[in-house]
Image 1 (cartoon, rainbow, N blue to C red):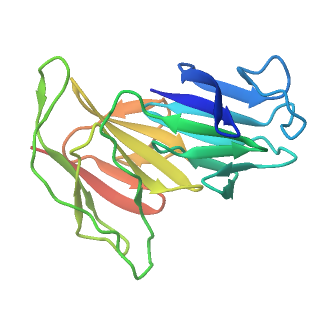
Image 2: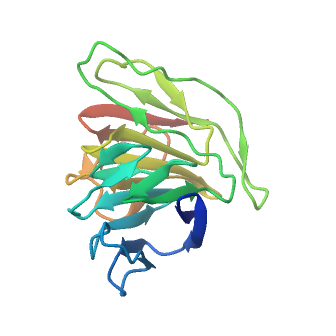
Length: 217
């Protein structure tokens, strides 16, 4: 789903394709990405692939993990993000040119409602199957009554660090999956137990304290 380009002082040292669910990074030789430098902890960070998304998590390293100059604990990587570990810079690149939606932040009870678009475009997948338009209607919270059109391959929504889920457009329809958070989102009042569940029009989703309805067609 992406690759990492590791550089030091502007010189590219290695390129690593992200192919596993978990890719470890650190100074110890058993890591998937080994950076032999004292500024790097033995087990410094781990990259987790969840569907089309890649998260990086700092493993309580001594010197920390930074993204675009900001210290992080766990964060979703975006195309062209630069991870900084010591003097090393690791650029994350999405090499398939996929069309991904940024996370829709839900803030129940806050005054600022997220700006959500409404569209009715059709998406054609690689096998020629045409999936009809779908959207999510927010039922509770500051954004109640608004809709977001699911025009991208992957739409992530929720509150980063609390609870995040994704809706993926597949040849067979739309699939809802848990991405981040200790508690799992629910569909029609039933907590998600597996990795993902197929959505049907009218399904009620509860995520990060906000209720939404999936509408297709």
